[in-house]
Image (cartoon, rainbow, N blue to C red; front, side):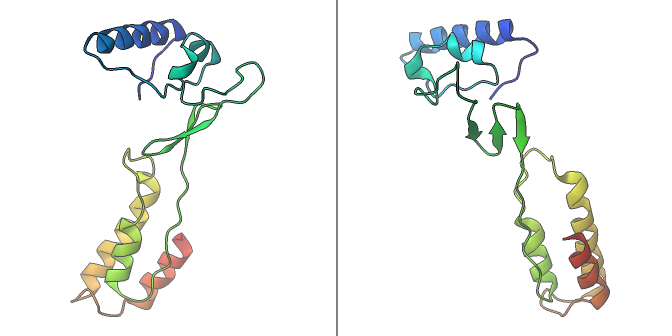
Length: 142
């Protein structure tokens, strides 16, 4: 995945990259873009959705490590944080279950990390029952 300031640069780099890698026997496929003009400059078999009608259809949503909506050129984050039971281990499991490789959710996840820190300061083991105030704060955050 790469991002460019303008379409001309993106088209140039994609062409150069395809040519260079083809010299080594590598054929890049599954191309996608937020711009239909770039997609129309690529041979149809190289597109991630070769059946896409560029004149009529909306651009698809692509899934990499995150979900990228090509139409709006935006990442879409869908997070379901499991509810905790009663222990610090449960709190850690819930907080760690959020997959955020680029750190987009860091401001939101900061609260869960504060709760985890507070739980560790008040508990002596992972399986000790959490203080009721921490459980209430988790439920309010979640």
